[in-house]
Image 1 (cartoon, one colour):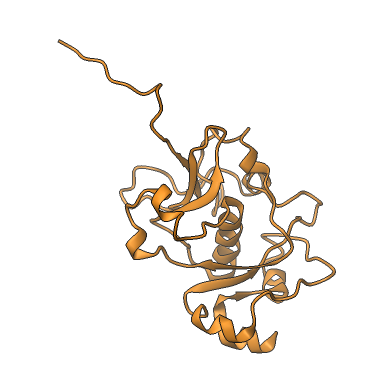
Image 2 (cartoon, one colour):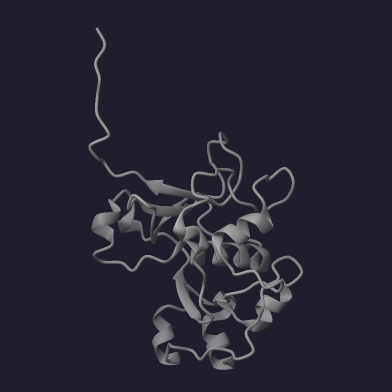
Length: 203
């Protein structure tokens, strides 16, 4: 493990790093640390641009690590505490909100891929493996507390999840650069055109 830590530097987040932020993000470290699914040699190409993070499935109070539980824990009001979630509620009954992480290692990219900007998700998903929304949120909050930095501060990232209509989920953009919206980790859906969308005219 020490070799991998040296290789990935501050982009490595394991048990020691999670223990450092236990007072503000109390996750339950599994008794059996999962094995690395990535040979050390293969990490060289990802060491600078990806975060190698140990996912955990539970909080210390026994709650599963889900978007719902994190939203409840961190809240939705930046005037009370930050980091937090952006205040909206359309998603509260969606299935993806209760999806959990596995106790396993994940590699997740730190920055948006430039050539992917302003491209429809249906095209991008042919070439990229989208992360789950819960993995993005978990990584965002861990990174915020550990590194004092915002991931995807002004960007949205596509996720593998969809809502009950099949609309693609995207998350991120903690800070609105125009200053219109309050701070908060955002969860949105990309509305696909269906027969219920149409035009009317005015004379």
